[in-house]
Image (cartoon, rainbow, N blue to C red):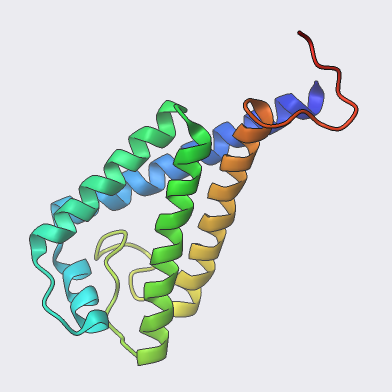
Length: 154
C-alpha cells in the first residue's frame, strides 16, 4: 500500500510538472510565434506559416489541460512523450545542421533561450522519461495486469 501511495504521489507530481511546462510553452507560442517560426524555418528550410505555430501552441495547451485532468493519464503521458520525442528530434537536427537560432519553445526571453542543443536534448530526454513514468504509473494503478502472486478479488 505504501508503494502505491508513493507511486500515485509521484505520478501527480509528474503530471503537474508536465502540465506547467506544456501550459507555459503553449501560451508562449500563442503569444509570440515568431521565435519558433524562425527556428523551424531554419531547420526544415521551408517557410512555416505563423498560424501553424499557433496551432502547435493550442495543442500544447490542450495537452497540459489533459495532463492536469488525470483523465486517461496513461494516454496523456504517451502523448507528452511523443511531443518530447519530436522536440528532441528537432534539436538533434539543429545540432547536426549547426543552426544557432533559439527554438522559442518556452518564449524568447526565457533563461535557457540561447542554450546549446545538448542542453535541450537533455531536457527532452528527461521529459520523455517523465512522461513515460507517468504513463506506466497510471497503468500499474489501474487497467494493467495484476502483479504476479497478487490476490484478485472477484
